[in-house]
Image (cartoon, rainbow, N blue to C red; front, side, top):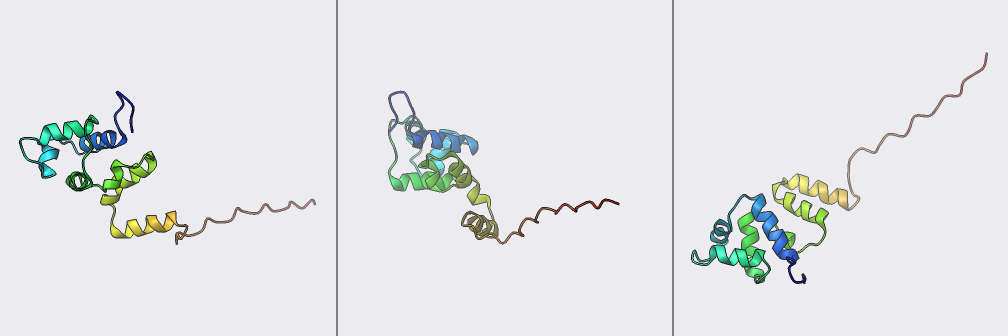
Length: 122
């Protein structure tokens, strides 16, 4: 949990994803299925760490942003970058990335370094 004056991980990731999508808090709330009377204030409260949404609401927000909900919860910035990119990858690229991570890449091996020829003296 974040300390006083510090936004929680969820709230920081939510703001990052919303701003990346160029949505207002109100627009995001509406897209996530929140009532129009509370859409903006509710997202504001989530971003300011006043409240954290239930899992179902977090899923709806992630769906509205087109990202995996795991993005909101990972403390690893590199993994967060991958999660943001994931929805834009084709099925083939997703498989290739997973294979690469698992060490199963079918990429051509790197060529061996060229051997130096010994010079002959005349």
